[in-house]
Image 1 (tube, rainbow, N blue to C red):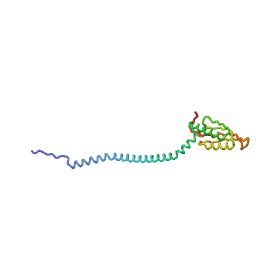
Image 2 (cartoon, rainbow, N blue to C red):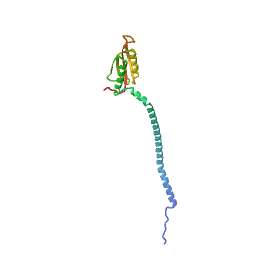
Image 3 (cartoon, rainbow, N blue to C red):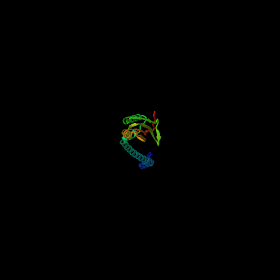
Length: 181
């Protein structure tokens, strides 16, 4: 008897069909994963665009800030704080001495709050030539601080050409918070 040679049960056609089946199954399984990855990539691209926009906005903000920095500092310096109030007082005393024959002033011990702004109230009395008094007011106005002069009183016993007795109060606006130590 002749030995039987068995033919393989897998013909090349079966192999091709099986391979195609495996590839189609893989595509079917991987298609939702690929679609979700595509959405993730689109989301990341949107976030990159938003970050680039934010970066550009930050750059513009920095440019505006640096162009306005000096103005901001001038405004900030117009309001003395605990550290700079002695400088103001020194400048104020210098202006008083330069323009008056005699003077004295008092200021409040603590800031007064009004509509969310704090100020120190000064009361100033003295004697000066009328032109010296006018120069005093001008020089105070030119100090680099936010000052409001109010309630000016002049007594002219010898007329405007001679010495006048003066009194006025003024508000010096200060930073908030402010405390005198």
